[in-house]
Image 1 (cartoon, one colour):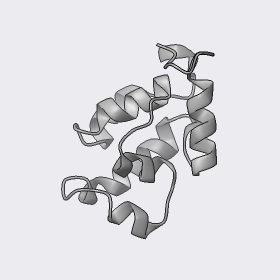
Image 2 (cartoon, one colour; image 1 turned 135 degrees about the vertical axis):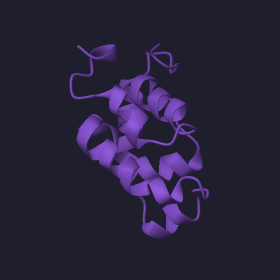
Image 3 (tube, rainbow, N blue to C red; image 1 turned 90 degrees about the vertical axis):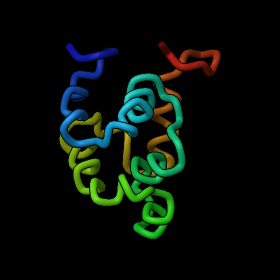
Length: 102
């Protein structure tokens, strides 16, 4: 079983597909429901191209396709897709007091 009872999550694939400076934030978001920074949030919320492109830096831009590959193939399907889906995910990963579950 993978971390924190997420059977459809393969965090080890993050190393090959997600830029190193985004990995900690993406891992905290998926595993603990901690909202990432604006650039990563726009990606996981599947915002418009305009929204994503105005938030990512030059290091992320050439890696966008790989980040989406990771989300589509190796992240839990319920953790990305729209702001509503992402906010619901965050709530499921937090304890009843609103803190991250870890």
